Image (tube, rainbow, N blue to C red; front, side, top):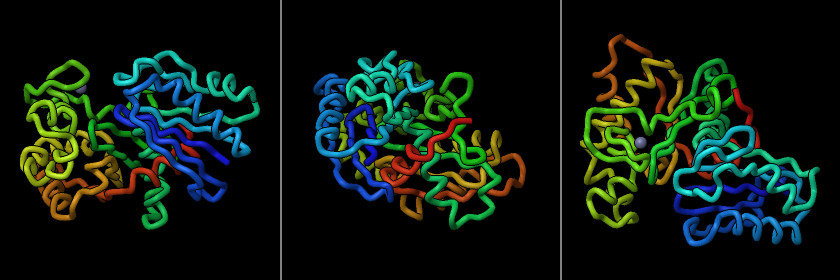
Length: 282
Ligand SMILES: [Zn+2]
């Protein structure tokens, strides 16, 4: 069995899968109530008592480099923790394979495997995966590998600067995430997060289309990707009419007649499981 931890700013999901990626067990806990390291320890020991664990994967909302969390803005207790060493210590077993990576990179890589079977020419092209939920993250996939950059921060689409004054969770103003991220909209507008996600596109359609198209324009000019996938609580549910409007708006911003990438919403959990299991960095 393999254990996958999907560690986000608001919740930690724990999934046990078999060799065929079938889900054997899953559980979700809020990530802010107790130290996530205690929760991970608890889950690992419980899983060890029930299953023969071969691999443990971590998909972490934050900067991860060589299995070490460098910086996780919403989960400070994980900073500077090497999740491979931590897992080996808890399980008292160094034979267990451990991999930790940034959550948007895991999603992007997994979404590559989800969509690649129906898009054969994707093999030698670029894919960008965007996770749009409480925040905005992204990963760049080249030749079936996640582009991590010098030390793990490549593909931070959420923090590219646009011409607005909304504050972002990172402390700066002008970020794409500051304009369209669920958490920032919730703070700005005082709407409860659950209602906000449901009403997000309906109430803020024109606003989010404007900002998001400006973000996509930058990606397309820079990378000329074949596919852009969307995950996250908002992204995976993008209605077709929204995608059509997004394409039109973005096309108007492009300077040349660029072959427009396919825009495909993908189930986040399916992609994260595949991404974790196939994770290879560029
Ligand atoms: Zn930011």
